[in-house]
Image 1 (cartoon, rainbow, N blue to C red):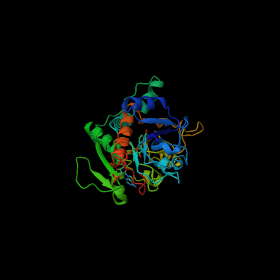
Image 2 (image 1 turned 90 degrees about the vertical axis):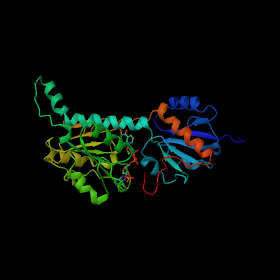
Image 3 (image 1 turned 45 degrees about the horizontal axis):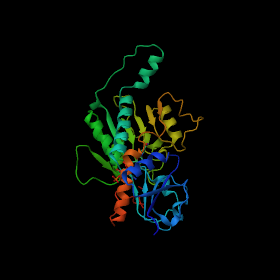
Image 4 (image 1 turned 120 degrees about the vertical axis):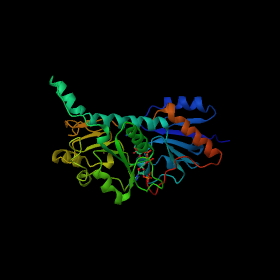
Length: 317
Ligand SMILES: NC(=O)c1ccc[n+]([C@@H]2O[C@H](COP(=O)([O-])OP(=O)(O)OC[C@H]3O[C@@H](n4cnc5c(N)ncnc54)[C@H](OP(=O)(O)O)[C@@H]3O)[C@@H](O)[C@H]2O)c1
């Protein structure tokens, strides 16, 4: 009998921590990596992060793809991707890492740590205004699993938070959620700090551009608008961020993601005094936490149940 095998195809990631976790969680599950010799016909499930283009199309008996990150934009660029159910990881560990990243950077800009750190380098005692969190309006662009968790944490700290999503919310919650093109301008006009946590889709590519930055308020208590992008690099037009910083549409930015990663050493973003760069590590996928989601999806496929967190390929997320 052909074994039911899981293929782990995670480009650039160390395989051993995942294999070790799979062994502990599901000792009977056969797991192979791209470094192993395997029969393509034995692969029933694929756990992926940016697998080689065309790879999944070579697996004739594939029943499910489980993406090990929250965003499936890279996977969906593969025109040969087999038409089998595709799930993406949603997990409290990943969500809390992103929540913490957003809180860290909102507080950094709220407390003007850029100015404080610059003053320290000059041995200068700088006294700056400290607005209350309730005076700072934070807008979460992409009010999904990660956005809603970040919003709740910021609201808990007293910030004045709102969200923006594609579809309207059927019930009003404690945090106002704007939606669609019609809700965007009003949402932007009340975002002193704009946090982008959108998936990268044909609709959202390039959304963080000069026109959008010009709709952000300049009269907030921070003295200008701040951008935090931890979604995807393709959401932003990097030249427009620099132009918006120059013309005053943006006061500062924290960027975790870039059009081309790693960000090249020649990029002017690195040395801009009002940009904080982080190396796409807002929320890492930790095998210790996430392998359980994969094993559960394998169990569901074997039991004839639908995958959790199914991706809608038509929408791209
Ligand atoms: N930097 C990192 O380390 C890192 C780590 C993990 C994830 N990410 C990024 O974070 C993204 C979000 O993850 P998630 O789990 O929160 O995704 P999610 O639960 O699918 O939420 C996505 C949100 O974006 C909204 N949205 C999608 N297309 C839109 C459009 N055209 N207009 C307006 N709103 C739109 C959705 O609206 P609806 O609610 O109406 O569907 C939803 O609120 C991922 O796709 C990934 O790119 C980055």
